[in-house]
Image (cartoon, rainbow, N blue to C red; front, side, top):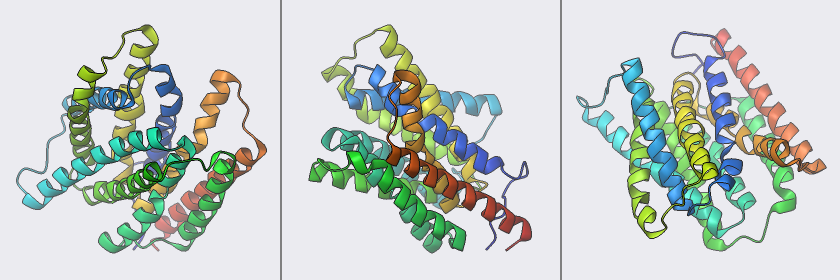
Length: 296
């Protein structure tokens, strides 16, 4: 099966959308530090705002729901929404129970799960360059987080690993729904995550303030809302494994924002690991695109 583009447009439109999505996702660590709220309240607040963004985008672009007349498609919508809502909540909880490095590294086992599940369910067999990229990404991630790994709690690590599996499942589901509108699933997921977090707004009342309000607005409208729209657009145009390989740039970009905001410089291992990840993703994207143009 070729790596063909499903929609018309620039040859790298799908990959560019996922890259920009990863850039927006990568701001979460820095932005969450600005918001002095309970983590579940942060997750719920940003999801509510993201749902509003996606709903407004639907109205502006006059998108229609394509699931109501097809029970199978409706099942994909419901399961996909629940799965991604669980993913977002699991990752927040995991961050509270284990180290951030452990949580990120374990969640970003997702390309492996996405590759296997995409191969089995979508018949999108990973190409040689993507297997090579997966191996290099794994090595790069180890170098990237080597100095901060360890010290995590078993439950937190298990939840982070589970969030990696559900994150991979999410990419497969969105790709499966490429002929409908994957954004519907992301809209549903953010609504569910927002509703699940509502009790925390009453138990741990959020404190207003300029930094808190600014942080949650950017988290909701940009870091999750705009990123979700971009991911939905990109996953219609690239295979599951290619999308997840590009998305893995998210943890690589996190130290960039920390450096710009605080002047904290990353160590040599972080720079080497990040460079390996970046180059492997670029290599996979270019080779896969050329393969698609040749119809291989």
